[in-house]
Length: 460
Image (cartoon, helix red, strand yellow):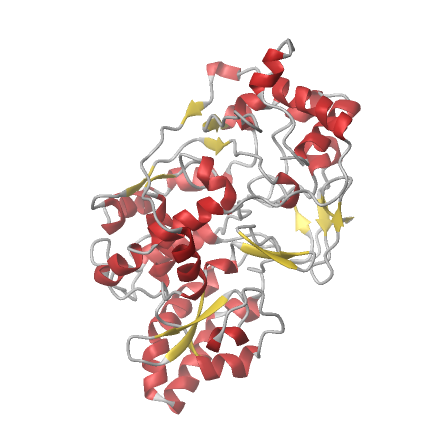
């Protein structure tokens, strides 16, 4: 459906604007300046993303098929050895010539929705709570098995197995559906020399035992943003951050430079991704009303949409947004991690990247928001309806990961309110880092206006 409203059109129609947002303690949103980005070829970037060797170590192909089996669906329409693998994995040639299976970016940045794979959609079904998959003993067993069977295969798998043995036991989340990517990044750099990127079995950075959860934002928003991550942490060259998964198996900085030379094309592909259209009927008249309410109440932070729309790229201080603060505090307080990155190979050269912490979170663009449930930076709110009315947010809730169902009225995942915590199957918002509070701006709207805004958001 054509996007309905823009700020300019409303102004031309003579609709008056009101500033609803009030800033406590004199705090105000902080604009993020733009950084130059490399250009590239989107088609080449897609091929590298789905078949490239940005990780050059993994489980030997024969062992992988023995353990995981063949994939039932070839969503990516890949051929040759990749035709038998899930979209989350890629068969690549290790430096010694052995074929290994490595995880790829689509582990976190793609999801099957209604029988179709959407590249760029954050994987909200991922399971970092599964100790059988992440347990370091699993990696140790695989290492021993390969050593006994084939030294050449072990040589090809060793960088991957070494890293997984060192870090996997420190990645567990307390519920399913959230991501521990921030923790993964910290653990990987702690075992790498900042200049050479060579691996050390000894960690150089101290971390707390807490694993702070995040939802995975959709890739199609990146073309509008001046910074990456939920607190605008990532500045400078986006390709450098996108390629950081290479830290899992990279041998040294020379390999990193080779991988980096492809990520301008990967970024071009990501910029080409468009959000999927809402597939169900939309009440156009109600959406038009919702657009007016949105511009008056939400556009100051989240931008305007449609022809002539704009996005302000604002960081919102914690005193205004009031959402769970553990993520931004962790980023802000990880001085060793920040120092490592800002003095590392990643921060050098003609397209450097850097980390700039902030006490709060970015107000993201909302393109395709209907398909990006659950909401807030930690995925603690299951629907748009409860995002805009905090009184409806469940303290404990669960959803069916095996047979997921979408709610096109409340807009989000169908869920069940639970009486209390129940292992990793229930989202427990009383846990540190998992809170569902804050972003209560929708509470001041009438029930009709909230419904109208939801109808408008379906069109973005």
